[in-house]
Amino acid sequence: MPTKYVVVVGSLLSGLGKGIVTASISKILSMYGLKARPLKFDGYLNYDCGTMNPYRHGEVFVLDDKGEVDMDFGTYERFLDVNMTMDFSMTGGKLFGEIIAKERRGDFLGRDVQIIPNMTELIVGKIEGIAEKEGLDVMLIEVGGTVGDIENSYFIEAVRQLSLKHKTVFVDVTYVPELSTVGEQKTKPTQIALRSLMQSGIRPDFIFCRSEHPVGQPARRKIAMFANLDENRVIDDHDTGNIYAMPLNFMKQGFDSVLLRDLDISGVELDRAKLDGLQRYAEAMGQGGGKEVSVAIVGKYIDLHDSYASVKEALVHSGVANSVSLKLNWVESEELEGKSREEVAERLKGSDCVLVPGGFGKRGIEGMINAIRHARENRLPFLGLCLGMQLMTIEYARNVAGLEGANSSEFDVDAPHRVIDIMEDQKSIEQKGGTMRLGSWPARLAEGTRARAAYNAEIAHERHRHRYEFNNAYRKRLEEAGLVISATTPDGGIVEIVEWKDHFGVGTQAHPELKSRPEKPAPLFDAFIASAAGSEKQAGVR
Ligand code: GLN
Image (cartoon, protein in one colour):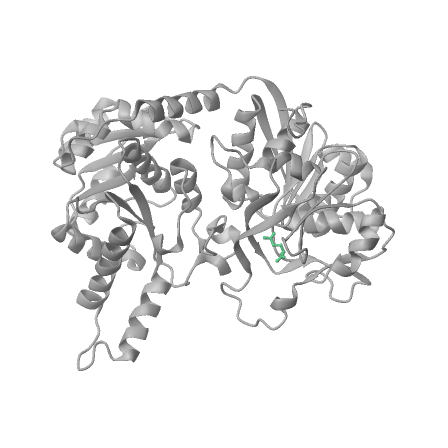
C-alpha cells in the first residue's frame, strides 16, 4: 500500500500540544497494526536545536543516532515505543542548507531557484523518500508553529502539494477559550483562524479542540458549521493531566473509524491486547494512590518545566512501576547557593530524594552541589544525570576526598583539582553545533554495584550529550576515598556511572531519561524511586 499522510497543523497559537495529538494519532494507527511514524517540521533556521538554550525551546531530545531534535520526539518515542532517527526531524536550517548546496553543485543550472517550486519540490521529495525508505503505511507530519507564520509558510505549501499526489488527511489543532464570567466556550478565535488555514489552500478534515473543560456540543456544532465539517470531525481534546489517556479519549469519540475511512484503509483490526495495555497504563497513571514519594528536582532551568520533559516522564513511569504517588518539588538551584546546611535542609524539607538533571554553564552550580551534599549527609536517595553526575563527583572530591577547590574545567579552568575535565577529543573542536559526545554509547557495569543491580545486565546502552568527563587522573584517589565507579565504557576509558557506597546515590554521565518508556521505565530511575519508597530493588530481588 502506498504511504498515506496525516498532516497536523495549528491555526491559532502554538504550545497547544500538537505533539501529543500527533503522537496519539500515530499510536491509534499502530494499534491497528499499521506502521505509522511522525515527521516533525520546525521552521527555525538553526540546523537543529542542539545549540538552543532550553529556556528558548524546552528540552533538547537526543536520539540513538546522535540527532539533537525537538522535545516532541520524546513524546513520539514514548507513545510508540520505538527509537526514531534524525531523518524525521526537518528544520528550516537543514532545508535551506540543502537547497543552497544543490544550487552550488549546479543542480539548477540556468535558472533562478525559488521557494515554489524548487523548495517545495525538495520537501515533497524528501518526505516521499523517508516514507518509502521506512516502508510506512502512514506518515504523520507535524508542522511546528502556527499557520500564518512566515517560518512555516513554504512548508505548508509543500504539504498542500503533497496532498495533490497522495491520500492526505489534514488535522487542525485549535484552542477553545472559556470566559469565566459567562461560563461559555468561545469559538470565534477558531473561526477566524480557520480562514487563514483555508486561505493557504488547506481544508481541515478534523479539528481538535484544546480546552480546559470538555468542549460542549454547542461549541463543536458551531466550529463544524464554519469548517464545513460533520460534527463528529470536531474532536474534544480537553486537559486531563493524563497524556497517555489521549488516544483513548479520541477513540471514544469515534475518531479512529472516521480517520481510517478517510485514509481508505480497510481490513485492519484493532489489536485488543495493545488497547488493553494502554487502557491499563492510563488507568494506573490516573489513579495515583500508593505511598507518596516527594522528589526534589534541583536544576537551573526550573522556570520552564519543559526543559526537563523527559526527566519528568521518566519519574512518572517509575512512579507507576513502583505504585507510588509522586510529588515533584521543583527547586531552582540558584536559591541554594551560598546557603548553610540548615538553610538547604529547610528548602528541601519534605523531599524524600534528590535529583540533579543535566545542564550547561556556571550559573546555579554551587546550589546543586549543596543539594547533593544534603542528600549524601542525610542518606537521601540521589540520582545525578550528566551534569548531576559531574557535580556528584565534585561534591565527593571536595567534601569527602579532601580535594579543596575541586571543580570542572567548564566552570573554573584554573581550579586546583579539575576532577571533571574537557574530553580529550573535544579540545580541538571549535564548531559548536553537533559536536558533543552524542547518541547511544555502551557502558560496562561493574558487578556488585547498585547500577548493575538496576540494569540487571552487564552492558547498558544509553544516550549522551556532553563535552566534559570524569578526569581519570583522579580515579584512584576518589576510589580510595570511597566513591564507587560502577560503569565505564567497555574499553575502560570513560567513567560512565559513579555511586556512593552506603546508600542509594548514583550519577550517570548519560541521559537515561531519554529512553524511559511507560511500561519500561529507565532502570536507574526505577531503582531511585524504589529506594526512595523504601523498597530498594537488588539484583534478582524484585
Ligand atoms: N555541561 C556538561 C558537559 O558538557 C554536562 C552536559 C549535560 O548535562 N548534558 O559535559
